[in-house]
Image (tube, rainbow, N blue to C red; front, side, top):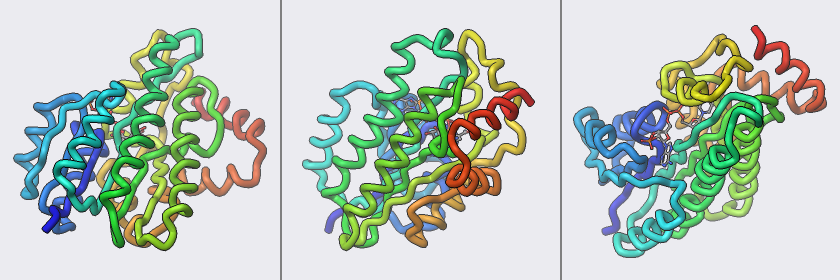
Length: 258
Ligand SMILES: NC(=O)c1ccc[n+]([C@@H]2O[C@H](COP(=O)([O-])OP(=O)(O)OC[C@H]3O[C@@H](n4cnc5c(N)ncnc54)[C@H](OP(=O)(O)O)[C@@H]3O)[C@@H](O)[C@H]2O)c1
């Protein structure tokens, strides 16, 4: 019988590692395939979970990774029960502070890799399989000084929503997960490593990875199209539906100075 597996990208830290732990705790899976660049971190995660992990130390911004991924799927023919695309990063700053190469890498990881891993995985999914695309509350509006990051998350959000409709009738659920700041991951530290990250001074009322992953898995179980795991991102989603983007960017100009 085909192995029932989960695939989690960005599993070497933060939200990705947390999803691995919660899938291990709540689901019966033969293996969890974990993908990120830091092999040791993912290997160490095996100490914390019972489900066997298969570690793939891959850079998802390298185009050849995707053909390798397809070859692996074709040879193993797993039954993919869960796909969590958590690999992603952002950079805070003006376009003057962030190189075009950095922004290109952000687009490659946050958009291209998530889309490619998803599309290549779908043929190995079936009724009851679940896809969680980790977007962000930044998907709900343009955000100056987080411009490319917010735009990449809008891409992933819209891709997820449309894909979900294309998959209606297959029993495969797709949920766009849109968290607000999460304080206990490496994301904010990575985002601040730019020439000038003072454009966003504080990260008030941030959430925690455990509750974000738990609420996201619950939303996916309920087959919700969008998960807003927390009060702030839920309010943001509602407000952004009614208020023009130019006004929302004005509000953001105030919030980021707090
Ligand atoms: N934390 C927040 O405030 C927040 C808010 C909203 C949305 N999000 C989203 O949540 C997701 C998870 O972020 P996090 O908070 O858990 O941050 P994190 O702790 O920095 O995790 C990011 C993960 O992405 C992996 N990654 C980075 N570059 C990669 C590459 N080139 N190839 C493969 N993997 C790569 C990292 O692993 P390696 O470095 O080992 O490759 C790491 O496992 C991201 O998509 C992020 O945009 C985060």
